[in-house]
Length: 216
Image (cartoon, rainbow, N blue to C red):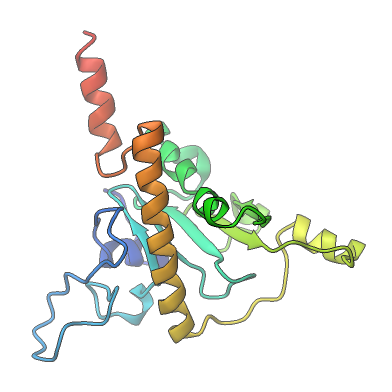
């Protein structure tokens, strides 16, 4: 596994080992020797504050967590666990798993609320010249509520390009929102498993190797 000691996303990846995607409330595997009660929900293995994240998903190859300076409520980052600086370095298998997570849990929401009409931006800045700040491939998933009839051209412009006012994510709100999104994602992944045959519980690399081995 490739990583960079100075990369904040690599620190998060190291702090949060893979867990079952269908687990709505992950628990820490912290090696801390503290005698206090159980660690806070979703606490990282490392005690380094730089590695803390409001985790939504952690598989063998991909992580998803809340952006700490969100454009909108529910702004998520999806990143490969291994360190790749640009999109062209990411292999097919990891790219396939990332692509499954680059949309919000729309199916679950539509089932419970037929009037649901949110939209979203999927933004990936590839390289310094394209405004990439963290040199680790990542996708921004930015939910957008309905604009309404009063929307102005200026508002439509910043929505189109994924811009907007950003504020620090409150810790209490982050914990609650991450918990809510984990539960929604767990339901969506169950739907993908049973309706589309996609199972993130199983290593996609192993699945592909076994499939080709059977044809040789």
